[in-house]
Length: 262
Length: 280
Image 1 (cartoon, rainbow over the protein chains, first blue to last red):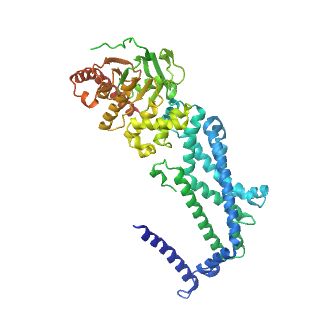
Image 2: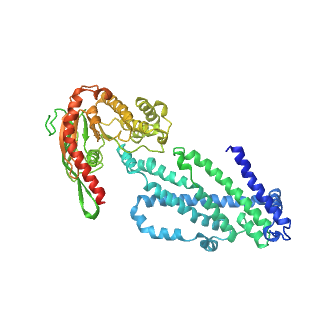
Image 3: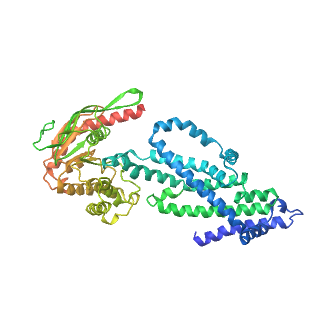
């Protein structure tokens, strides 16, 4: 199928879905409105809400806050994950001792930590960053750990026979391998950074997309909730496109088959 | 037939294994003796091929010479010095893919010089030269996954040779390649080797390849407790062409002679490995 016709079909799905939504929310069918506007709003109201946010400029503040929280959560979580992942992979003793606690911490649904972080760090951005960090950290940590562990024995022997010392092994062998694993999970970890930020905002904050959605919900403004959701989706898709671009540059050495993943 | 014990050579010995025994700890605290009391000497500038049935410990012997494995008993001497730790004089061409997948062909070749402290520009220049001499001058910026199996072996060869090791250890390096590519690689290897005659220890399961390439062919028995059971000098003249040399009468005579010894061991090795498979 050509690109153009695929795009046309994709657009058609959106048009049909929106048209159905608008129709069922405004025109009675068999003597009944199937999507009562109070619960489902309608596409026109949602669109006008979005237009209003952007034309008045109120949305930018919230978008920037959420973006900033996501970036911080991703950066801090990744840094921690890389450092601890490397440390554990090179010190099997340490890894063995901490193993049950790592599993325990990772098994915990992170949402329950939100109230604690709010208590500790207040209603500002840092409680959201902390929530994102707990999500990002484990993904990066497990991948870096695996990346260092998975270097093949042959490649390691070859490196040593070529005269590498421990430090050079780190730089030329373990580090690139760990990075490749970390980048292969980039979509997931960036996604989780955003999840952490938005969920944190939703549970208690004064700004951000999560806050916007929560406020709309509080006054039964269904159009506002849907509008917030659409803006959030677009935001995540834009970030994901950015990640894909970064990934293409950094993983040129990977066989193409490895790029087909979620 | 030349006799079965390694002969003392007048030139310096690049590698000398004396009564080297290699054992591994396996499950249930048992010990598996892979190689028992192996005596093997490779003279400086000599090309020695080790042939033996699958799983006889040929690679183990090579790893001992490389210093990657320590023998449980016996001694390893490299240029008359006892070997401690890794063998710094040796280059090792592995059977499996050993290139760094995240480095381009050029960087893969240059790395050996870089880690030794050569300036990067110099290392890259030399690497480009080596890529050209293995016939891959135009592939410098390819990553290993973009190269064919034969091309990867060429890069591997350049990666090892750029460091100019005095000893070359090769573990079935052309094993995964198809028959034609193997012969082409064999000729390339001989061509490069002729320019500066390093000591070579070449492990293979292919007797024809061994005779075509080497000065001496050493036969190992089937494991466990594999021993060296035969040692033949190859009387074929150099320079050799691998395609041509196989048609030589002397080649056939020697092949028949060695195969008579090797066949029994191959059958023994085969029965053992199939028994293990059934038991496991």
